[in-house]
Amino acid sequence: VQDWKIEKSIFLVQTDTTAGFLSKDRELLAKRKKRNPRKKFLQVTSSLKYAKSMGRVPKEQRRYFRYSKKRSFIFRNGLSVRVVKEGEHFHFLNRYGAFFSSSANLSGEKFQRDLAIRLADIVVEDNRGFFEASPSQIVKLGKKRIKRLR
Image 1 (cartoon, rainbow, N blue to C red):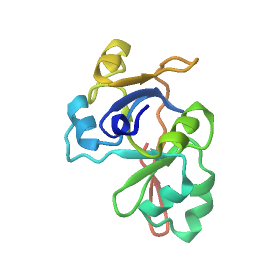
Image 2 (spheres, rainbow, N blue to C red):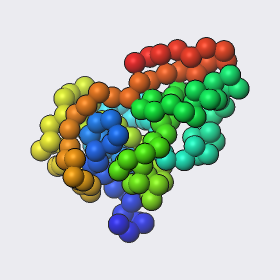
Image 3 (cartoon, one colour):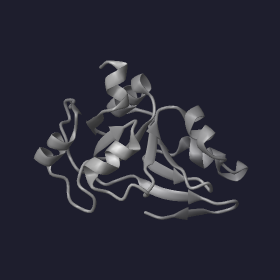
């Protein structure tokens, strides 16, 4: 995929948890999903270094952050990130970098394969196909505590 296409495209991919949309452009992603553009998006990456650059991880929680799998983190500054460390999704992120991520459906609705394919610019399907599975856990990092939101 050419670099100029990556910047202004929405990808439909099977993530490590569920079928999802990825894009470098959050406004385009919000528009396609018919989602409130002010609502923040999760950023997904394969780089722990990039994730740490988004916000501060308190010293007591660094090990938890580093070794977590299928878990999304919300920093105190309001930004959220998930680091993917293995599998097919890891290889995709490792090659193309960090993306804004969302489930592959319209806001508040269930996954529909045909609709998801129509909304995406580029469909990346591997041998697993597309399926809706349980989403990642979401935790908020506080100064001293970790609060589980989902």
